[in-house]
Image 1 (cartoon, rainbow, N blue to C red):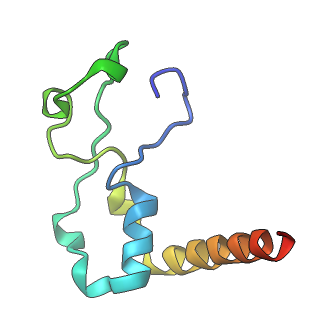
Image 2 (cartoon, one colour):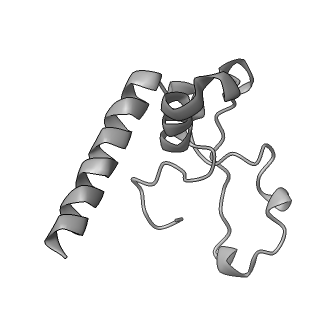
Length: 88
């Protein structure tokens, strides 16, 4: 994570929020969304208490999520899964 300069989060981030907006928008509280990208220590693999680096239990930018993007994302995921199933 620390080495990848393109990394944009993976817990409660934009993509997860977009998928939830597409699946069940009424459960998503966008007015409570907070962007946060914690600083990961070099030894993050050994971290057993993420609260020492994550203030909000968010790693990414959920405030940029949209339902429209979530629908497109889910359609692409389903398309990839279907192709994989059909090829096997």
